[in-house]
Image (tube, rainbow, N blue to C red; front, side, top):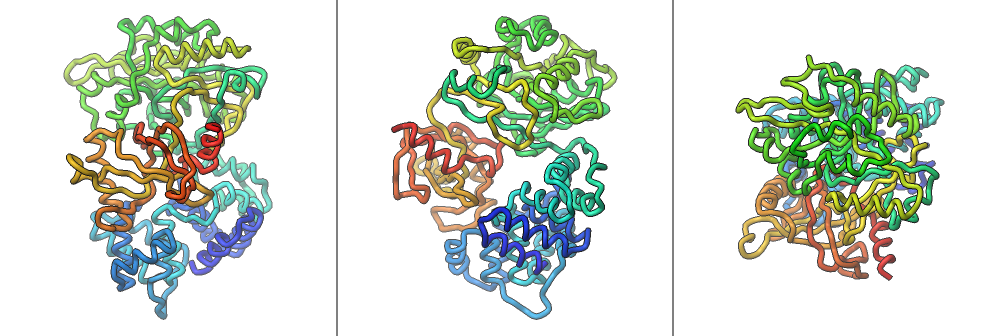
Length: 587
């Protein structure tokens, strides 16, 4: 582990990608296959492979207390170190004592991580963490804590680890990337690469692939400037969701790759009867269904009709995101909530079907496969209840109340001119949707990447997705809750504060977030708490100003919280470059 930590120090010390990949490749070659496999997972910033559901469940507050105890330091010394160094791992490396006999191997660390994950109860977990950190050298402890908190911060994204694996074992980055994507396990990818057998990697269902992302455009003219033929869809105000279906089993994942199946129990029965194994991409939306399910039949049968506005309207329409929020994060959804807050899964892409990965096919070809998949008769043996109109499942709850679970092929339109695109935009807004998605029909699906093949067009007040870095107690009726949030955007690999907001969330949301922030406090300064940078907000504002008040160099005028974004990870937040673009567009 000392060699691992020393390599991480060297990686962090350079900004050059070639040097970073060279250092990783050299390190991997020097290790056994098992050590290299575990190290690759650690270098990706996590304790376990992506496909595993294993988690440590050790919060930042607990780690902070453990570091303070083992370092035998007062809180003030920890706070001063944190302010100087910026993360808890670095504080551990700075303050933990060096003693003889310390030192762990990467395989020992992984074994202890698994013991922590398997332990039940905070006391049992704390004891193993104490053993782990006390046995490690200070430099090892620095990176152990960084891995535990998911905050490696050495300028090394997983794509660079993939490039390093290719360099270490004489394969191509594309071969490594494909194997890692199929397996969801960069450690297993290392083992295959070391044996020259990357081609043997096979799709492992029920681990989420990266989501293809869209780039914003400002005008209808720009929306048709990047490719010759465009497929146009409404941009729905919901949460992105990837559904994995195999032999009647269904699991649904959010953009953060968290499983959200329990929050939407009506969707798996409607998906389970697909005629073949599949991975679908779409949007879960709070949905107002038409009075007659039969009205949706024509749209499901002809999902890509060029003259589909009337059909799109007949499907029903999206309800506000605030309605959907009531379903998010719930492990138990009552029959009452199912009736009052129904959802639909608007499917717009297929990534895997009938034993074959689809992502390298064009959107045009994937659309044909998707249309066929959703139009095929469902296997009723996988349903609990009976099937209503195609694409919808009607089933009875314990109270015999009828609930409609909609799996709807997202309507697709065509536009060849800015005028036609403007008409579609106006129609989408009239349906209550955010705007349009404009997609290149000849584009492949690029997991985890943002480019010009998918575009999104919205017109609204400026918004940023930001990460909460500190919280304060409120005033008046909010004096006992943490309601004032300081937030940041990314500047390279670090977060820089750009504003503060205290309005926009409901009392229930503030109470829930107060509990979370209290459990994930890194530094308690009394009235203010520095918290783990995990919570993402969408923040609206009137304009942006230059300011020395925040480290970003900017300040937001009249910021207010639009909504919590539990569907996004901190890494998905906006960057200082994006903020700068908004500022310059004001000029």
